[in-house]
Image (cartoon, rainbow, N blue to C red; front, side, top):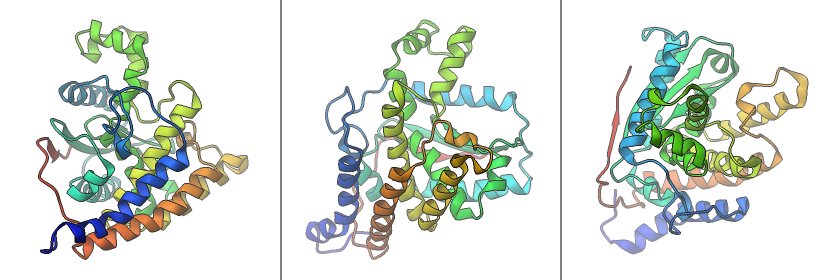
Length: 307
């Protein structure tokens, strides 16, 4: 949706998005190790352990293992239809070229087979494995008050996948990475203790190397997620409402939702979101007005597959 008078208009259109990512780096205030500067989301250093092919295969394998052990709702269940409708809109946002470019997501060679399923469990949680394998628990669906709040959680979880956070966690866990290499890259051939560890690392909620690093990835997922949900047409103000209720839940007034075990929700998270929400809204308005020009298509493949 480029304007005919070229780069100056595009620069004016993307200023909101660029400002948002600069503010993110400043607010988080930490530097990640490894990888040439500028390779990762927000142009930060990012070291990855998996090739695009390995990420796809591990995502498929881990997802099948999780679903095989769970009580998965049938495809024609209303809850599944709801999750897939919201998920499909978010998947469409992951294909918006200007947004991907401003976030600086690695796309070349990567293939996302987005799948959305619902697991019958009172756990207040959701997960997204590499290559876009998503599962939502019915406990979360009972907790969210709207599709906008559901998009908040799905956008956050999907952000972990598009930012390749699982591959990054593996790169920072030499023992797990070595166990995977020794098994020829196949999760099913890894011994039981290491397989459990790997499944945890592939899940977006896994903690790694202390809370400070985990919180960095969580903040990044919050940041990417609020832009995804906004560009998908959902109200980003719902993110503030949802995480505020999560903070109230963590106070002990009700049972602590499992999603909070590795997703810290505190005053800093809400303060960051209050900055990012209007910036996401401004970026979406600029895009809708045609003031943000798409770049050349990526060589990677982004596709949606329903199960």
